[in-house]
Length: 252
Length: 249
Image (tube, rainbow over all chains, first blue to last red; front, side, top):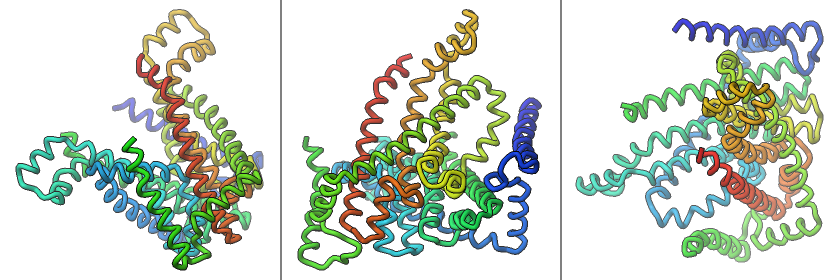
C-alpha cells in the first residue's frame, strides 16, 4: 500500500517535471515558441476561453457528434452482428462482402458522403457511424455466435420465440463482447469526428485546431489538443465504468 | 466452394441492380456512376499509371512512418518492459498522451514540416507507436524469467542480453503488434492525404470527388478496398508461422 503511494507520487512528479522542463526550455527560447509554446500559455488560453465561455460550444459540438455517431454505429452494429451471429445463412451471405469493405479506411467514404449529403452534420455522422461500426459488429458476431448451446436448449424448453431468445438469452450472454467492442468504437468515433470537422469545416474542436494553425496561434492549437485528450480520456473512462457495471455478474 | 458462391450472391445482385438502374432509370449523375463506367475509369487510371503511382506514394509514406514507430516503440517498450518501476512512473504520462487522436496533430505537423512525406509519416508514426509500445511492454514482461536468469548466469553484457535473449523471446508477440500497426498505418496515411496532404491515394480520391469525376472516385474507392483486403491477407499469413512458434514455447 505504502509502496504503491510512493510510485503514484513518483509518477506525478515525472509528469510534472516533463511539463516544467518544457516550460523552462520554452522560456529560454531553446525550443521554438511557434512549434512548442510554453505550457503556461496554452493553459492561459484554456482559462481565458473558459471565462469568456467560447470553449463550451466547440467542446459540446464535438462531444455530441462523437456520441451520436457512436450510438448509430452501436445500434446498427449490434443489430447486424446479432443477425450474422445467430444465423448461418446470413453469415454466408454477408460475411465475404463485409470482409471486403472492412479494411477500407473510414475517411475514404468522406468524398462519397459529401457528394450525397454535402458538408453537413448528416455527412459527418454517416462517416463516423461507418467507421465506428466495425469493432461493435465483429464483437457482436463473436458474442452471438458463441452463446452456450445449453442456453438455446433452455429457451426451447421454456417455449421462447426467436425474439425472446435473442433478447433474454443471447443478448445478455453476448454483452461482455459487445461492451468491449463499444469501447473501441468510441475511440474511433472521436478520431473520425476530428477528421470530418477538419475536412468539412464543421464547428468543433477539430476545426478549432485547424483554424488555430492557419492563424499561427500555436498556444490555441495546444489548448485544443489538451481538450481533445481530456475528452478522449473521459469518454474511455465513462465507458469502462459502464462496462464494469453491466458485466459485473460475469465475475461473480 | 459452396460457401464462396453464397458470398457472391449479394455483391453480384447489387452490381446488377445498380447497372440496371443506371441504364433505365435516372441516377443523380453527380453522386452516382454506373458500375461499367467505374470499371472503365479504373482500367484507364491503371493503364496510364496514375493509380499505381498514387498507391506507391501512399505505401512509401505508410512504411516510413511504420518503421519509425517500430524503432521507437520497440526500443522504449523493451526498456519499460525490463524495468517495471520505470514503467509505473512514466505510465500515467504516456496514458495522458494516448487518447489524443493522431489526426489532431496534423495541423502541428503541417507547421513543422510543410506538405509532403515528413508530414504524413510523422502522423502515421504517432498513430502506430502506441500499439507497438503496449504490445512490446507486454511481450517483454511475458518472457520466461528463467531465460533472463540464464543471461545473468552467463554474465552477458546488456547488448548481448537484449539481442540474444530478450528480442528473440519477445519477437512473436511484438510481431502481432507490428501487424496491428501496419493496418493502422495505411488507414492513417490515406486519412492524412484526404484531409491535407496533396499526394497519394487519399488525395486522388478527394480530387476526383471535387472535380466531379464520379466514376473515377468510385474506382479509387474500390481500389482502396482491394488494397486493404490484400494487405490484411498478407499480414495474416506472414504472422502465421512465427505465431505458432511463439505459442509453442
